Amino acid sequence: MAGVDAFALLVEELKSEEITDQLTAAKKISTIALGMGAEKSKSQLVPYLLQIIETHTDEVLHAVAESIPSLIPAIGGGDSAHVLLPSLEALAEKDETIVRTKAVASLVTVAAAMGDERVQNEMLPLVKRLAGGENFPSRISAAGLFASVYPSSPPALRPTLRKQYETLAKDEMPMVRSAAFSHMPALAKVMEKDVLVSELVPLFNELSTDLQESVREMAVANVVAMVQRLTPDEALKLFGAFSDNLQEDRSAAIRVLKAQHFVSLAAAMNPARPIREQAGPYLQLLVQDNDLDVRTAAAKNLADFCARLDAGTLQSQIIPVLQDLSQPPPPGEMSLSQAVREHIAEHVCTLAAVLGREGTSNDLMRLLRIFLGDDELKAKVLATVDPVVEALGGEGTQSVLLPEVIKMKDDPLWRGGLSIVQTL
Image (cartoon, rainbow, N blue to C red; front, side, top):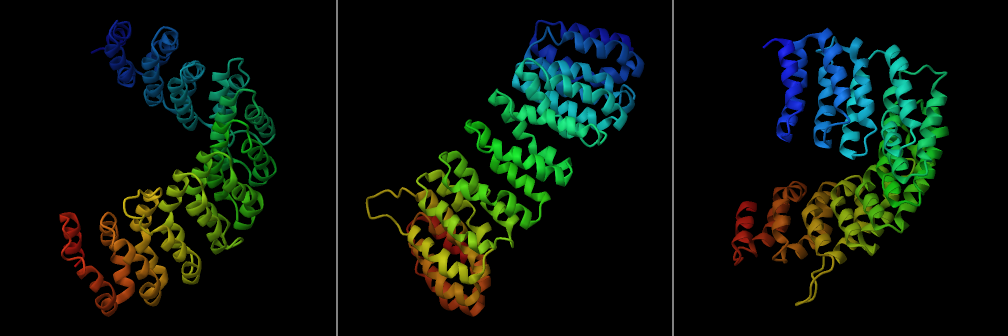
């Protein structure tokens, strides 16, 4: 089919009253462009895409925003990619979140295909327009573009860019501040390290104490990303207090995030703050927090955290607490921490790799016997028993572990019997 005919068919399908026809047409834009050739695509197809933005549904606009970067090869490559920016800028100003988000992702892709000069001449003004938009959706979109233009910007223009980003991070609209905060790790990755420390970290500190929980919730993941560019000493100095204060945050959702990322944060500051010194804060999340989701999130990280500790810390601080947590509830009562007990049972065998033969035989086995006597949890232990076998060795396994398994050979539950057979 000739290129002009293909374009006419595209126009006809996009005018169809059937949404499925419109979506089908939007998804084959790049194929149509290849048939039209670079010049006709730039003179006919690209302007047409800008024209339909005000007339089609959000679902179709999302498909258009997703398809636009695929036009780059058809219109002549990166040297011509800037002609796609007007359509994506218009889509980035839309109220619908999924359209804006896809438009920003496509702008990032298009910017990556452009040379530094084009980014300076075309993308920088676009970011400035969006950042200064009267309507907050455009400012939300702008927040996701700074990391794409910053590396290509001349050093003399970078302070202005950082000021524009700071303005968004302090915007009166929580959704704009949230967008700026969510894209902070990407900007931190391409920013000069001294500027990261002197400008971005203070901005992080301000946003991490924002009154809006939706903004503050991103702080934990942001720190995990940002400390990758820091030494342990720098991470401790800049974010140690923040990490400590999370333990007492009034929001259970934020304490859950702390529990989920606990190991990453502790590891980033080790050895400036030895990871064994974090056993206490970890146990606070695991045992003392009044929210079950926090305790469960901490329990899921048991294996990863304990793998970084020494045997002495496990024996003196961790195992005694695990033994208390693992006790079954009285007959007829439900355990309020059953999910925690399940995750401990699932991961406890991994401690054997740190404890070694003697520690496993003397300390870990006391804990394992609790679970092996629990009809609901023994299968989890038996399914993960390999580290215990390796730590005990052949003789130790026969004398210490095997008798415990054999005691259960007459398990009336078929699943328990199957686990025992597989373990043997």
